[in-house]
Image 1 (cartoon, rainbow, N blue to C red):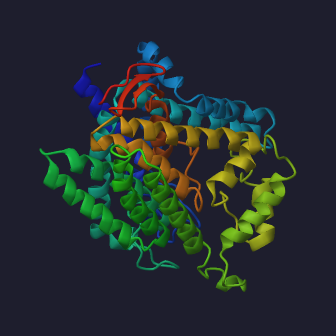
Image 2: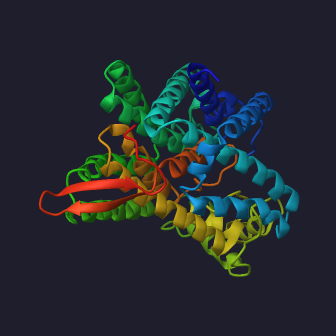
Length: 427
């Protein structure tokens, strides 16, 4: 495929995966409760399947580079194998089979990005797609405030084209990262990029999501510290990074567990529904700890999780509001182990990658893994079907190369490095 045409295909596909074109908020004025499917969903579903079909062809055409990329994160491969075979023990085999196939295809699109484009190229493509999505969301809400701004419990909070403001705020936090990184290094479109970045930050504020704002601020504080890893090999910088991550994580936990939104249920207002949800879900995980209840079967309609949470707080939900607990419920402790090892492996490889590069875009995998780590404490931001956020993670995990130091000259502190799997390229 022509390189320019292929990049346009990627940008178009990423815009489709953002979900902004479904205009869900327009058809759901009351929010997530009583969700009504958008008439655009079928068209977008066909577009996604067309993207998947072309992706499979492109993967087959570049099989050698695909195999190299796959070998970079075998933990993620093992996790996907578990997802695919989970219908064998699922409470709802048909649900698990369908969702597993879609999630596998979503992961393969991330693999395609990793095998075809350098990290720098990926970040530029993401910036284009997410920049378009940001401007579209901003203009949409200005034009249709009755749809783009919530009216009920969260009245006044912006939700853009999304059905709920927390989904929109999470998407905007992920969007600011590529925009920020490209704006730091780009000269040609610098002013445009900084303007769109500013719009994205304003949108995060307008969602009124405290956890989104806290995670965004934590990531921005970490940027100079992650950059400092390039010039310092002392333990001070990692200690600062660890301290900020712990502080940010504690802050997110406090923000999401201190809001009295169960007041209408007569519950203790010093806790949120998440606490009760977690207790109910963990109790059921104990019944089937190793392999779980099947991929996306735990919270399926009529499933064990849905019944357990209803019994606890009298609300029907479709996720545990914690990514780690959600994986353990669906795929057991084995699935949680594979995901955790993939996350840790990608994080460590991303640190080594940053130390071997000079461009701002190289910070993307490290920042995005941090984003996933923090957001999964209050929301499920992993293994989502047709999710652009899962595409980002798969692409990052399969992009960051294995590196090791093979010779160190202690007198000159000159490090000679070689790659474990292939030559490192400062993209």
